[in-house]
Image 1 (cartoon, rainbow, N blue to C red):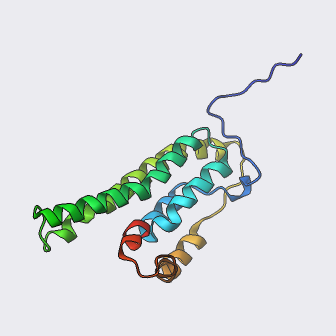
Image 2 (cartoon, rainbow, N blue to C red):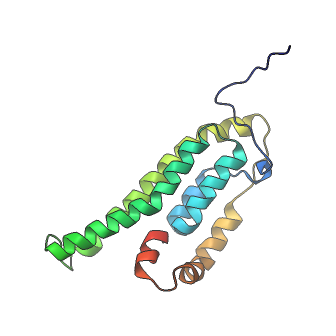
Amino acid sequence: MSATYRIQDEPRPGALGHLVVNPVFPLLSLLLAGTWLGVPWFILNGFAMGSPTRRKETVLAVLVIPGTLLLFQLLVLLLMEGVLTESSMPYAGVSAIVWKLALGYALCNLQQRSFALHEYYGGVVRNGALVLVASVFLGPRILEALTGGSTVLRVMLG
């Protein structure tokens, strides 16, 4: 009979452990490229790192898109009811950006703890700068291909 010792918050990298990046890169991709890249990258990074909070991270990441859609529908409803005007819509639209960035920041903070342990104990860490720079330049074309010109999809994934 052998007892196994396990630290509860210890990251346990899986087969994708060689793809781990600093959580700042998915956050920057969310800021600069959009939800279409930032959200999947956060999820992939959490699973690659073996983060003990990866389920919580996945739930937060998945909430970004439906939350943005609900916020968009609320703004359209307020516009139709006359609470908002056409000239105030761009200012109200900032709330969708704030929603995405707040969840991105929360995801970055959740992953940062596991990443620090992963890095400290010699885990492989990749540089995400190349993906980030490529997404900034190729992102508008990729977003156009993903949305097909739909305004609602552009708001959700942009």
